[in-house]
Length: 264
Image (cartoon, rainbow, N blue to C red; front, side):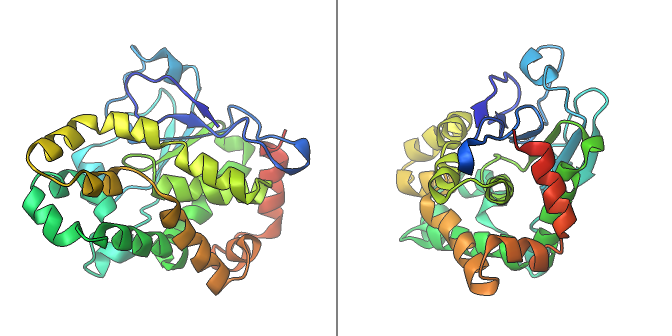
């Protein structure tokens, strides 16, 4: 996966170049991931402009999109796929969508997230990426659009581009033939960019007496988070292929088209 040196969008990465089994790689320039596009300025960000993005899939909630609406690349179409809609309708607000609020008050953060609670909350959210109807619909859209040449270069994102987006990238790369070590390495590779993007928030939180471990649990990604989703796939479906076929209801022909389009 290749980092794109954007000046207005955090954590832009091209899945192209990721190694796959059999000496193959992911074809570059076809599938990209990032954080939210609310500050995108094509006029001053030639790196993003050069990607020629045709389709954007936004995994964020209604509230996230309203607070920070995307600024689309010229000519791109926007598709909304709210991964967390079911959790929100059940009255559960995942930590992933309230980073700013949680890091604004160290005492509140300690009460609700200290002592390993943050890690447990993220593990529960990652399991919902696999088992909730809204998440299944969102990742079905990702695979279907990524398999379609008419989608052109496709960029998918959430807020920080690490959790909802990270699981989407894991599913795609697994289907394309990345091994377990590569999947985990690519998942964790976003940490430097995410920490840089949220550095002021982390510094303010710790300066006010907040526990830096809580901040990192919220801002970063950890093996245990991804392992929770992978375990949910194994428990419910037995394999990624069955999860895609039975959970996401993506037909084999779409998976084959995805591979034909993205494997170099």
